Amino acid sequence: MTAPSNEKLTSIQQALLKKEDIQIIVQHWTRIFNIKFGWINDFDKLIINYVMSIYLLFLFNNRNIYVFDSTVLIMLDTFRSTCKLLNTFNGHTTCVNSIDYLTFDDCQYICSGSNDNTVRIWDLENNKQIQSFNGHSNCVYCVKFSPYHYYKYRQNVICSLSADKTIRFWDFKHNKQLKVIYDLITDSCSIEFSSFNCGRYLFSALWDKTIHLFDVETSKSLHVFNGHENAVWCIDISPLQSNNTKRNSIGNGYTICSGSFDKTIRIWDIETAKQLILFKGHKYWVRSVRYGSNELLNTILSGSVDKSVRLWDIRSGQQIQMFNGHTRIVCAVEYSPFVVKNIEFSGNSNVICSGSNDNTIRFWDIRSNKNELHVINGSYKDKGILCLKFVPLKKKGNNNEHCCVNLYYGSNKGFIHVWG
Image (cartoon, rainbow, N blue to C red):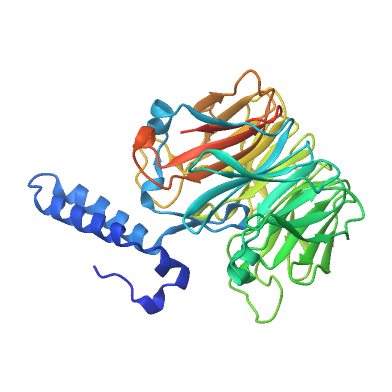
């Protein structure tokens, strides 16, 4: 088996293929050839790991490009047997509504937005806050690192959305506000950068029942998506493009999904701004939606005020599974990097997780409606869990040598906790 030529690798992939990764592969080959019995199974696993480390596994959650190699897909049993509360970030004085993650110049950061009107940036290696922005005059509902500023200008920029009806961009390296978009005619709860054109386009879910598409470069509104019958609470962008593509057309082949106070989830064609699919089933507001990736690319995950977590099939337009167990609002849902035992290794996880105002994070097997696989109970001081983020570890070792990701969550009382 030979590695693909450099011409077939993107510039991002080439940059991520580090020398130490090649050394690890060589070490595996050496070890394998010294095994006399059972070498076929080991050899198969090696080939899979090698292919995954070459081609990589890209997760486009929240439209930043997160890169996980094959070692990140780990057994849930391993995680739950070793995980514990590792750290707590203190600084926010009330609800942490949103967390995002970025690696920049070999440093790992998270940013957070809160009802205390602030946007904060945290250095994960040093476990401390490095910046705080106080320009918003009301609650900060959503924060995202800007991939567009990263790729085009090599700037460390955060985008924040607030109840003051503004979207603001902050350069956290130089501690300054870059610009403000005042075009919001009403409150908005969610923003997402496009998974195409290096994140040049920004989507915002508004309380006036619409979704707006902005050009980050010009700050102009380009599209308005109409159809929901009540406020739009949450949105997500499809990570990959369909086969029907055109050049010089914004978002052609990509879709957006949205969850609303009208209890529905809708999928929209970005190029035409037309509704494609309508999902009905939730009994109350839809609080969180996520597109799947890889083999789960045709699924959408949702969490609701009706306390349920649901999985939907885009192709059939039907609900696949429903997970009941939370006793209060489900505020956040994510596809996890975990697999459960007795599952052959693949580039895909079969475990999802959800965070709730009942102060728990629950893990579920997407193949069944059975009870949860694992539960993390928040601190009694948290008073509810509002947002989740899986963050790959920069280094192995320490207390996390058996786990390649940490789980960060934001709480109603302003704490950001780290489990791993």
